[in-house]
Amino acid sequence: MSHRSLSTKARKEASFSLLPYLPPLFAIVIGTFMVILDSTAVNVALPTWVIEFGVSLQTMQWAVTAYTLALSAVIPLAGWLSDKLGAKRVFLSSIAFFTLGSILCAFAQTPGQLILFRIVQGLGGGMVSPIGMAMVYRLAPPDKRGSIIGMLGIPMLLAPALGPVLSGWLVEYVSWHWIFWINLPIGLMGIWIGMKHLPAFQAQGNPSLDIVGMVLGPTAFACLTYGFSEAGMGLAPSRAFLGLSVGAVLLVLFVISCLLQRQPLLELRVFRSAPFTFGILTSWIMQTALFGTVLLFPLLLQQVKQLGPLDTGLHLLPQAVGSMIFMPLAGKWFDRTGVRPPLTLGMLLIAGGLCTMALVGTKQEPAFIMMILFALGSGMGLSMMSLNTYVLNATPPRMVSRVTPLTSASQQVVSSFAIAGFTGYLSSHITTNMEGKMPTTEASIAAFSDTFWMAACIAGLGLVLGLFLKKTQTPMKENISMSEIQRKDTST
Image (cartoon, rainbow, N blue to C red):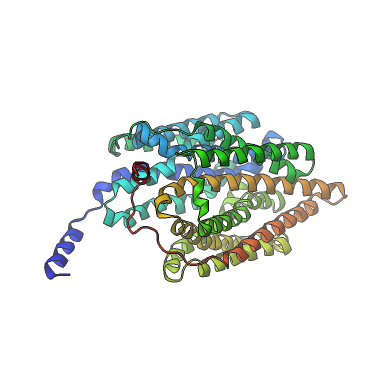
């Protein structure tokens, strides 16, 4: 490269300013932050709802499960709605819908109302993150996308740390209703800043919509989640069988529909890539073990250790800290060595932490549980970053744009399956132990240990599968937006 071209490049670097990008980025960050903050805050409030509403844990966990199912249902629609109506309009409408759902949740008087209004929240929140990421791609200059997209990682790392602590303080000293009321000023601020500073991305005409897939997919996932929940309880095998069988039939029909459609709701043809299939299966197993236990720790700390909501939130903080520390390190490690080393260490930390909880953790002091949570968070940062990057690299280049909605939706579905299954399993074992004349505390401790042991075995399976993943080549040198790639695929 000549001296003149080097000096020109240097002048461009010196003249580049991040300031023009800050207002629209701030609007995107606010929306993403609000959704993630609310998702983590609800976990601490769950034991309070069980007591206040006087219902079982299995019933109340649907406030989380129904929300994740609603998220998964609308994520695949993000690209279609953005192309049809414009990304800015859909993004701001999603924030408004999520804020409306939050207000309704704050007014909920019964478990049924709360679950219903959480679905409204999920329908709004599901599109915020994928549309926000697509807008960042289109806003940022190609040579500055890395640094600008890095700013979008702020809410993804900060919100999980603040959510449990803020929720614990509000639940203990104010009211659980305020974990939803706080979304009102945040949502209004995001809408105002977005209306003022987000550019009006042009709509892309009238893309086709896979209506059959839109009906079959969410219905199949809801039936399967219900079946997993009932199967975990072990009290109503007929209802579990009905939910699982109907869900399985609908899932098969959904897969067939997606394979036959030219523009399916989810592009399942990507599973023809063996490295992609192996990578995403490993990711699902890791998510099952990790996200399935996300509700167990707040329940353990409050119901067994008798901690208040604020103390519970503070004790959950190490998990977010561990993830914040190791997630960026995992990216650099992956670039140097490939997926296997960071994934192996991450899965070892997850499996080891869950195994420790199963053997001795429930009988230890809360400080010991904080150490386990730090290990789990560190393992999550190492594993999730490595697996997500591996799955992207293992994707055929022409399908790269389709992977984001597929992996995002499948993560929410797997999480809902795992939460329903683990909470049902925990509730069932507590009931069984108490019927065996065990004291209430001992019955709960034994049930938590059994549930953690099952999660540890699942994580161990993920560890074994991860050893067979091979290093892949980066499919694309230049990042472009999802809609741009989709338009190229359609035109060819």
